[in-house]
Image (tube, rainbow, N blue to C red; front, side, top):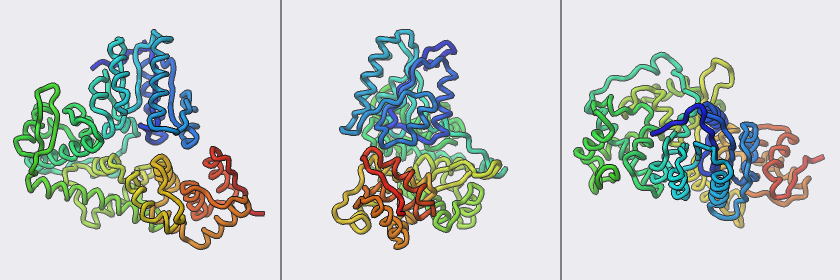
Length: 444
């Protein structure tokens, strides 16, 4: 692997529709890139009409925003590829290309860059990164590694629990099974190198040396002997797969791990539904009171367990409201969960002629729930509450508009339910409606 030197000339190309996180991560990532050399150009590609908040954020960080209307699949990919090729011709002094994407459509272009003799730094979410793309990179970084560090809330949070080496090995073997499932589900080949990045991303505490193995490959070979995984092909093109029959202990442990994560997410959601989200310190105490022992599923520290749940998009840890306070733990809803909820409720709540929103808008609704600290249960209550519905109808009537699309309608109901003033509500919703040429106004 190679890394940039201080005199490197760098170009950044960011596929925002494929890889994105929160503001703090984006800022930290950009600052880290800039510390490695001189950034000549920095581009971010997306349909900015549906990403206005992140557009403002990235513009302030110095990115040139390349607008790609979301009229067909992979539109941003084609545009980004053309910009990379153009840059290659007009800026030959560029020694390092930073590609922020995990899309396999870029594998041929990545190979061409390497053949051209430049360094390729790939930044992505390893869970959804094409294995071939990862293998072509000179340097690879998990975007989640740029998140601000999660300090231990209490000294005991940093203490490692003592478990037998044998048990820890078997728990790690169950974790690598999860990695194989996730990568295979994304449609990628499960290469050993890619699997290691995903393993470390999902399980920050994992270190094969702590388990008594000299290296990653030795751990994989042990896991194969124990019938947890299957190794196919010779090094360096070895792929991972699951055996046809899993050991009973593996099935039992996998179930226990999934239940523990789901339990944590449920507790976070309960806290929000009760009125005030739990702080990290509070949720740690709460799950202990309810009998969850995270040590028994392979996590030596509470902070590691919580971070792993966040990587699985079950919760989100946000900064404290007051300086010196404990971070806040919120429930998070992935696209699958949002799609299931809309498929179940769209006709009842939005009407028989309304379809389930597209993936882009499901992501936006999920992000809105996080930003407004709203649970999916609260979203449903706001959409069905008569007082909220009346306030919403009065805005539509004053605006002479019969209805809004599901995303903007959901957003308006949440803001009304949260008690915002009418002018603040329509300002926020109008920002989302501007691409549609619709504008709300408050009743007289």
